[in-house]
Image (cartoon, rainbow, N blue to C red; front, side, top):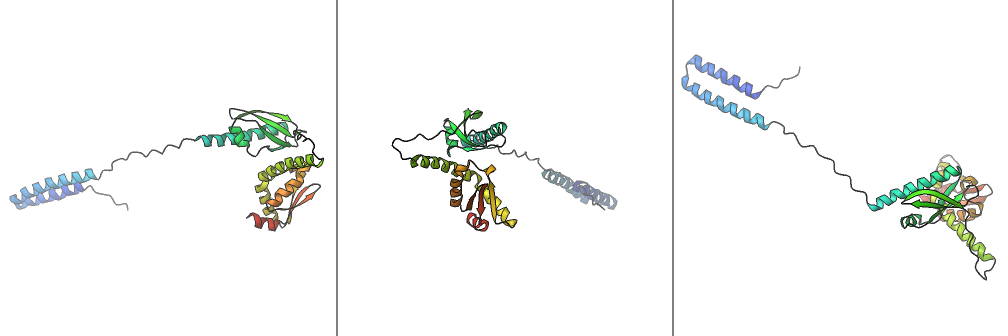
Amino acid sequence: MQETRQNPLLSGMKIIGLLLLACYVCRFWPMLIFVIIYGIASIVYALAKDKKQKVVPSKPILPEPAPLATEQDVLTLAYSLICQRVTALVTADYPSARWIWESPNARQLIQDGREVFILLNRAGGYGRAQVIIHNLQVTGLRYGAVPAPAPAESTPPAEPESNADSDYSLLAFQWVDAHIADLSARCTQAKQNGLDHVLVPETELPIAQSWPDICAELARAGFNTQLLAEGIKITGVDENERRTE
């Protein structure tokens, strides 16, 4: 049974009424004056106590305003949107194409308003494209071939090959840097499935001339690799996982 809470003022008035009735029946008039004074004091005290117990509604706590975005936050968001826009444009023209920034400091070049280029693979014969950016927004791509290095005067025949290798080394470094996390995850998955190697097919790799440089970059990252005709085979999955942890 649910208990009901009685009003203390009503309870006090009942007690005072009983005392007044007792004084009247007993004809005890001096006590009647004391009961009247006591009753008035009790009523005033009960009213004051009840007023204090009333809950004062508190003002709603307003949420703190969100911090204003800094210039660096705006540039970071713009760079992310630029990458997404470039991917959308490349995929729209060549669905199976892959791209990476030609320069490792592409973000700084974009902030400085300078020209930026991307390197392409499986893009209909195009190996390079200029990203046209206006007010931190990508307006289009200008496709072209990768420029050949200028031959130096009085240079032995082996020297141009060295320059070409250096270009592939840059491409290999950027490719490994962009795929290192995915390769580590695939090696871990292969170990869980009881496999001792992971094959990176040629459809995921840049041009075949850059594969030896990619193997060298993977070796620096702790992977054991083997160059095959159909791609790059990563062996020694257990050892690779130990190094990357």
